[in-house]
Picture 1 (cartoon, rainbow, N blue to C red):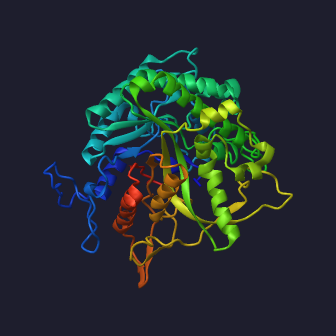
Picture 2 (picture 1 turned 90 degrees about the horizontal axis):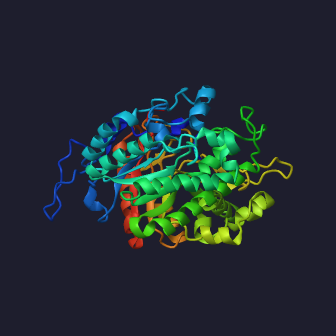
Picture 3 (picture 1 turned 90 degrees about the vertical axis):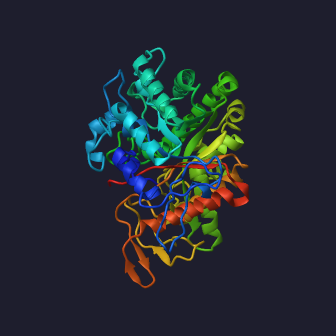
Length: 498
């Protein structure tokens, strides 16, 4: 689960892009050329003891790119007609809740320097880029009636055109946590069902102005993170939870509000997809889905209870927000454990939800061991404990498909992340089977740049990121080619600077 700090969502800045070029392309390597005589493809080399990998190792049509979000990169907090967001207000009011008291007022100044950023992406060979639109930049007051900001529309039109001019496909996220503050004040944002109508109207505006050039839409980024960290733990905006969970919370109920918010997020997604398919699909011919955060989970023991706990935890994470898009309802284990606190969909809503994903976006960063851990009967209720499971910090082997004698000793540079490259293969294969071969996009992944060390059987050695990256890339290739599951593309998100 993500550490409750925006430091877990650092932007892919210009410095990060340059660092990534060294990791991915290894500018000291000799470029390889495809047998067809096409332009050379930079090879990624790992030393004499590790085989090379390059683009030809992946299926044709595979997309490589990077991912960001408007609040993380744009800056220009009060420029160009943009209205305030809940994150603008949250970081200004509670700066101590952010790891280094930073905020998105300037960020990496992407609003002014996007052409420079896109040029770096092109130099790295990226052919896709996932970014989000700031709702408050095109609708400063959150609603159509509150006024459309033409300057914001122009900015995103220019941004998309610049991507396309450089051979980069835009993957556009409609909502990535930064809600117009006006809607928080008016009706408490996603706690109110009113949000569904306003969300769809905002999405409609995006489709109208940008859909002629955008072929891939993500309605909502990580609804699980918003529901849990925003309304169960109170560590992301708007900072709500039960007082017994966190004395710093601004009010809330960790037992009920996450499920209410999650319900409205799902309905917002489904209604948006319905609108797109009815109004725009015939002419724009785009695809639409979500981006779900997922950890790969292994049972701590071979006991039946731990195996059941593993599946239950998946149900309460990926299943919470992806199962309804396939079946029209929440996983049965959620119904059983949460009971009346979990809202129900009407027949019409269930019909609208079912089949409302053209692809499954997966944000994969880490893996854990999980075990059965039911709370005491008199324990206070919370969405964070309703799965009756918990994580173990037991070490996980690094590449158990490969004969590298390495094990993980420490987490990565942020406390919630452990390095387990095999997990990216496993989550792809699980989601492919679970959701009936729906195309998969790895919409985020990566690892921080600090505090990583490995232990060799012969003793301590310094960290070799090339070995990690090789394992990671090799297992991505394995996932692509397993049973012809080739509808997979990936985007790197840099997590350094902690």
